[in-house]
Image (cartoon, rainbow, N blue to C red):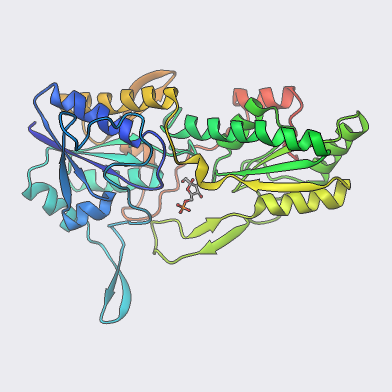
Length: 373
Ligand code: F6P
């Protein structure tokens, strides 16, 4: 093993750079050179990369920095890549170009930092013979086969601080304050921040809600003398029998997410105002959850993930994802992560959603957080 490369793919999270640093430091201590592909799989396709070293300005002082020093690509599935040919948009499988680039320049391992779609492509590349090691990233915490992804803890911390701040306005003005947080398929951020921030209602994609039930819970609080309520809503939450609230759609072809969610917080606030008579306001937290400095927890988790990934590369253990399992750092086959036999090039559908017997669901129910069910 002489040289390895890192790529970051998907939406930014706090902790990308801490993982990069963990890989590089472990590599440098073993005499291995590190490179970073620019903007994820796009860089792999265009063969654009830079040398990274913690001994100079290319990768020094990055532990606490948000974003990614090598960028990150959104919605680029190189197995079904959007290109223009003779004025027409067509989708092509350009993965062989990437494989050639890696082989030609002699990279012994590629580390893929990303969420479910990124790891889906990582697994598809490992089927094509590349040495790949995945590292689970996403604020949504929904990568399969791991208990936690890096970036999630920072997002929960930001959401909790927002709830603390919204409490002030809610209490002062006897209002319902709704907070819309991210969470497309999984309600982890909404659930954990609702518990941490002392919210009264948590609406998550895993539990379709009945707005009447939510209003009843808020009215009951009102009767008991609490004239304000805090409601946390995941962007992917939806009413029983209803659909997702979509802000926009895009055409990135199959294998990428083509809907931008958003607006459920406003919808819930409006309906609750009508049903309870209490003034309701929504705040959409948006990209605040992804940016900025990582929490100490995320810095440590990211460092563990990065250094473990390099350790696995040194052992020649490829085609795996580093993960936390029963609280311990280990690895799992990428095939298990994407779902055994998953079609090459297709969108990933194997995500880890909130399970109903999870401690946090039970705890939330025990302390009276309403899920609207
Ligand atoms: O995957 C993380 C996530 O935060 C989702 O919850 C959200 O739907 C998505 O990113 C939004 O990403 P973007 O607007 O950058 O496409």
